Structure formats: C-alpha cells, structure tokens
Length: 354
Image 1 (spheres, helix red, strand yellow):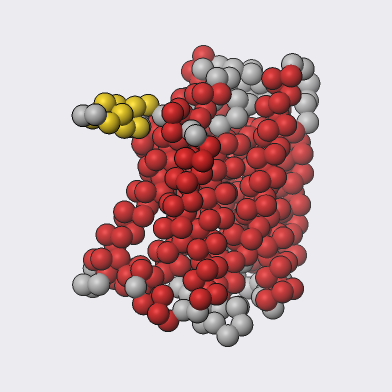
Image 2: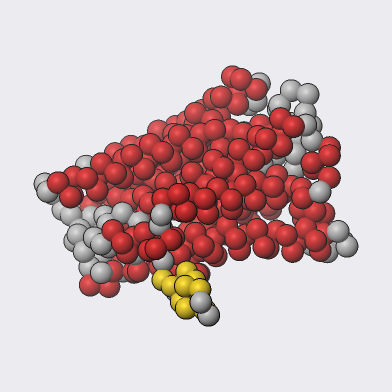
C-alpha cells in the first residue's frame, strides 16, 4: 500500500471519529431541548429550534472554510473587479439536497413518541440500501459484501417492524410528520450521492475540496433563506403552524428562553456544522459508496445509541427499546461485512464515475 493510499484511508477513519464526536452531543441536545427534559426550561418546538440553530450553522460553516483557506478551490467568476466563487449546476443541486438533509435530520429527533435510535435505524438503513443502488446506476460491479449488507439491513428494519407489532402497533404506521421527513431525507440523499459519485469521487484532492466548498456555498445559505422567508410570512399567517413556529424561533424565542437554552441551541448549530463537514468528507472519499456509506452510518448510529443512553441516564428520558438495540447491532454487523475484503470484489473505478 502506498503512503498516499494509506494516508487517505487513515483520513477517512479520522473523519469518522470527528463525525461521531459531533453527532452524539448534537442529537442528544436536540432531543433534550425539544422534549423539555432540561430542568426548569420548557420544551422548544423542533421547527422553532431549527430557526436559530441554522443561523449558527451558517456562520460556523463559512468560518471553517475561511480558516482552512479552501475558498481558492471553488470555481471563480470575474464580476467587475471582484473574483467571486461560484458553483456548477451539479454542486448547486447537491447543496439544495444537503439543505434538506440538514433540516430533516434535526427535525427527525424532535418527533414526540419516536426515539433517536428508531429514526436513525430507518434513516441510516435507508441510506445503506441506497449505496449499492447508486453504484449500480454508475455501472459499478457490486461486491458480495454489498449484497450481504443489504440483506442484513432489511433484517434490521424487519426487527423494528416486529417490535412495533409487539407493542400493539399492527399497522406499523408512523406519524405523518415522520413519513414526510423520511421521504425528504432519503430522496435528497439519493440525488446527492448520485451527483457526488459522478462528479466528485476523484483521486485528485483538489476536485474533492472543490465539490465540498461549492456544495457548502449553497447548502446552509439556501436553508437559512427559506426559513427567513417562512418566518416572515408566518408573521402574517402564511405556512400555517410551521410559519408561526419559525417566526417564533427568530423573535420571541430570545425573550422567552433562558440564556442557557439560547446557548445550547447555538451549540446545536455549531455541532451540526461538524457533522456536515466530517460526513461530507467521508462520502467524498475515493472509495466506492459501499465503503463510504457504512463508515458514515456506523459513526452516526453509534453516536445515536450513545445519545439515547445519555438522555436516559442524565435527563431521565426514555431508554432505547430492545428491538432498537438489536437492529443497531445487526447494522453494525453489516458494516463490518462491508469493511472485510471477500474473494469477490467490485471495480475500484468505473468509466461513468471517473
């Protein structure tokens, strides 16, 4: 193994550690604040929480790119005397999808009666299944590992369904808001992964940073703009309860919330930036999706389990269900399978994805 290749693989696992370190407190704080588990402080509606936290995410993400000196990797266009960074149509659309992922991820942990681990099993399992599908579209030969992991992922989801049935829910139904969130999340991930695979998975480090910066230029800013418009419209009754909550999050939230809650919501936004940066860098790795996705999903899944235990032990929240832990264990086995080299393997590169 060359030093360059070894360095890339080590970097991926460092990115995975960074993702885990940011995701655990991010998901824990989101659940605690939105559920009213912070002693002496009322619950903050998940939609309202999204308002202020995304502002913190915007400031943090742009600051990180500036501190890293990565603006130079973006495409630039001369506008008068200024050399302005711009995006391609692909990074623009990918950024819009990323904005949807940021919003739905935060909101998924605020749904009443649905635990962190449960949402993570469905969301992570769904992306797990998308990985070989994207590889197939990109004409990559799918390895035996991928098919085994796909089967294990379906088993994990079946365990969840059985658990809900034993709990008296024979319809396996989810709250309508959970269904909408999951649909937007998985649809956005599919499009984003497809664009990344075809446009950004390259051995050229500059290409990776270029895609990353251009996507970040669109992702959080577009989400903030949408929320600001929704909040302003919500003042006049538009967008129903959603607009009203967004407006509350930008205005009354600061006068009705304690300084501690305001600081913690800002911290959620900062931690969200960390998950976005480390998670994206994992996906942009030169390896196939059936490697990058498991690394990413493993980090977030373990972080979610840790967050659930912390919410339970520290804030007297609900403990994770046995079926949720079993499903998590099965997905971890699937991840291990994908990380082991079996005799039958896929191509390292493909013509469609170079």
